[in-house]
Image 1 (tube, helix red, strand yellow):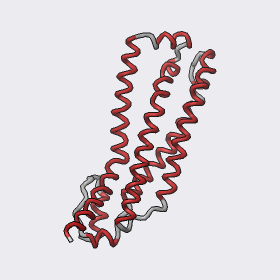
Image 2 (tube, one colour):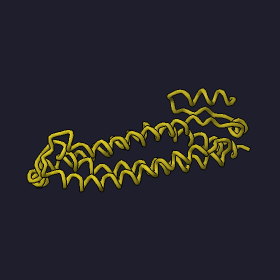
Image 3 (cartoon, one colour):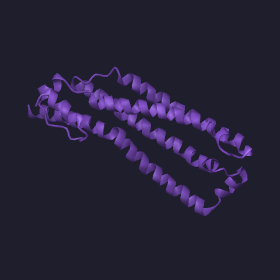
Image 4 (tube, rainbow, N blue to C red):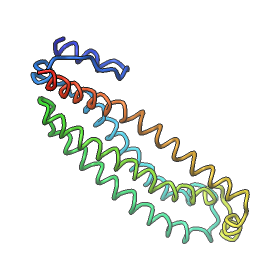
Length: 201
């Protein structure tokens, strides 16, 4: 199987990777999985940045009680600091990934390593901002500060928060797998083919 057939296989939505010879793999490895990961990473960086900036204007856009503004922005500052820390890390990966090559087994191992680190970073980012998003919900509903305090003593609301936490974990895992996991799997299958080819020699 030649390089054109490898490219056509990766270009399909299926994550199955064809079996190829060591020579064909060493000659040229398609960058398509990495390029798709970089595209998704860039979209995430833009979307997250716009969302964080947009949340800052929420009190002016909706009928949030004025007494909540100070407390809201206190939480928002922490939220923004945590978010931009991870966004900067994501941007560094995006910049680094533009210089990575996929023309040998060693270079593919490097790409695979950096991509796995990025996915772990992205997962940590999602879980780090989840508590802030959950905490913002009463503000979004427009409850006064005194009523928000009472909410956290209501067992129904506590059960709702626990359910929401599990839902966030499930959605995060699914979203990461959809955006990045299948392309990382393609790289791993190609690396396994390198290993198999080496063992057969």
